[in-house]
Image 1: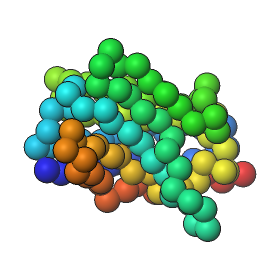
Image 2: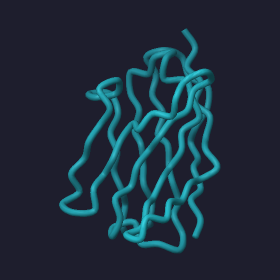
Image 3: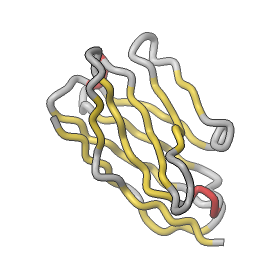
Image 4: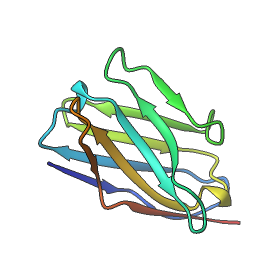
Length: 116
């Protein structure tokens, strides 16, 4: 099982980035997928969720209206489109999958830095 994030980088405030999570070993359409972020000195924050049933989504209040989580079942990928980025969005972003037996899997993370 492997989750590999990509797409991070340095962007100016107000800019956009799209993060990708390539998943192998699991079929993403069958699982609830999540994006978390971890910023220095802060607790890990659940940013966005796409549920396995109906593809409904849920967002942290801090990103609602700016971020969009989606998945491409044919490519077995999960995405996080981030618009109107703010300096406080600076963090390492992680893709997460939890199996029905409670086993959690994480990628290595991708750094997002938003300059003011």
